[in-house]
Image 1 (cartoon, one colour):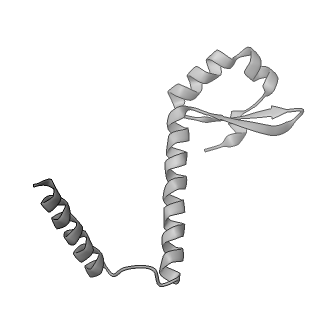
Image 2 (cartoon, one colour):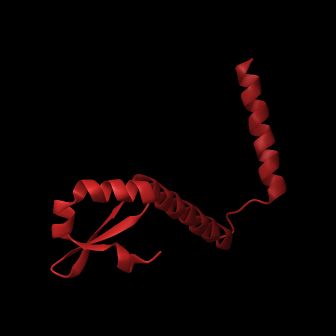
Length: 96
């Protein structure tokens, strides 16, 4: 994605807001807004924003997982499955 094609001054945003929003929505893009020649804000369509947030959440989970593994706080797959089976069995017993 080339951001250089998606850089607009704030004055352009003010006068063409409706068109920019429609274009962002149709093209699932990102717009960089400048003020006095410097990048100051980013405008994204909602789908792009949601994908970005989901990607950041996954990266955060991966980082936390790596940290837990380094600290020795991880379970083996067998231990995790056994624990999960116990919890499912307990849950089913509560339902009856």
